[in-house]
Length: 67
Figure (tube, rainbow, N blue to C red):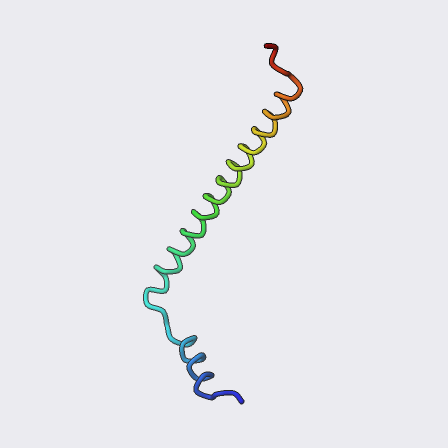
């Protein structure tokens, strides 16, 4: 059985206007934009370090140190 009170609570919370909607929207866009940049640079950095470690490992295997 569906509770009518639950449905009315859900619809009333959706229809309430947000305070400072324009400011919140601008801040959200800027935050998302900065997080996109951060995640991109983090991914590039992690991949670069992993590739460098892989290269170094293969280089050391193919060029043994002469002791």
